Length: 265
Image (cartoon, rainbow, N blue to C red; front, side, top):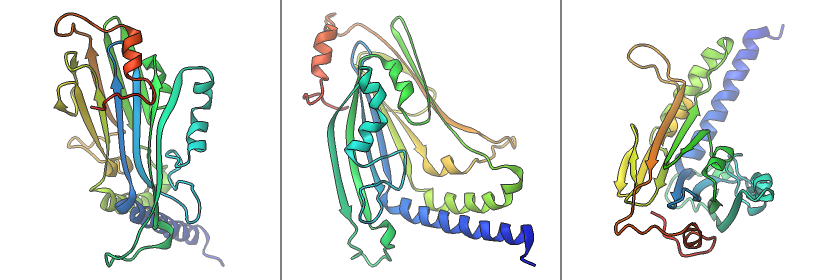
């Protein structure tokens, strides 16, 4: 007798423990994600991605599949949008770092190397953001108003996996509790904006912080209902600039051209 379903579940539980502990070790020291959307007056602009992720030993391949670390893999993700002329990629900065291990901590060989990645995706039509931003994105443009809604669904295990996934969630919650994904939305400082979430870091800049722990663990609220989605939304409304003159679309595109001197807020 091999142990049947119980033995299979036990083996699965051990595998899940190993996987989550490994990922936890990886994320506690080598994962950061900052996303900044910069809108010009006509709601075109760019997205700047900045992240640190672990890479496989002796390879330039990210352990987090949706955050590639080589220029060729990044460009491949946008291939169809580039071909259609909907986005332009520029300002790549990619470097690989080796952990020294001199701080007295035990360094697993698998997690010694990390990549620092930064690049920009330029766009003229904000609706294209729906096609490449992480999570679920809805962009609505009506006259002088732009609305962006972001959602990050929380997956739930099937009934037969609940006990095993409960262990995974507890482990994940512990190792990810101090880590976040940070999002900024920038726009002309004289524009009006509103949001029920996040914070205003300065005129023309709204920020949102997404706890990584909550992307893994679906917490129950006081009324014992489970939140299935983490979300934020922001509405930006055009307003006349001080002095009344607004730059032409061509002037705005020039200020935010790839390789230009645009300043990130």
